[in-house]
Image: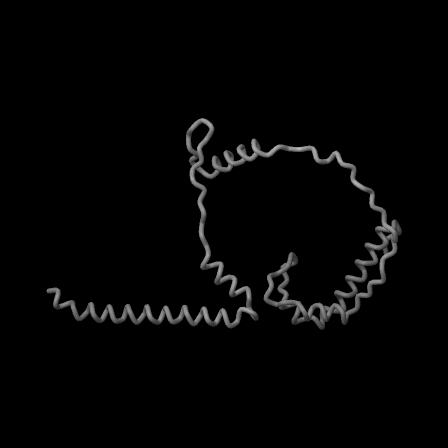
Length: 173
């Protein structure tokens, strides 16, 4: 009866080996592609590297002062916290007198914010970097630099004037 299936197994082994060869070839070519494009797209490269390095480190059970072992993460955190609180000593380092710094010149240096300067800065943005706290993609800012330069320059000029007048005690604009 085994002779009956020998041909089927050989065919299966051939197809399995062929699939493994194709998968290995695809992984290799993907690695070469990432290495070739790592300067233009570093986030994809580092994402790949990070996916290969993922290791989950588990904190083993800790011995409690009563001799028992911790059972869950909350007990582990509590025991580690108690240990670190007993080791570190709170020292009073605030007895030193803080020097008083006075401004030599309260005037704001002449800062000229023009639409051309803002546009140049926007053009130099790296579009592959992650979003900022405003959640706007840098590639979008770079692509729309001509349209955004004038409004951003006006906003920055207004902000600089407000900061200047608030620090000098004058009325706001």
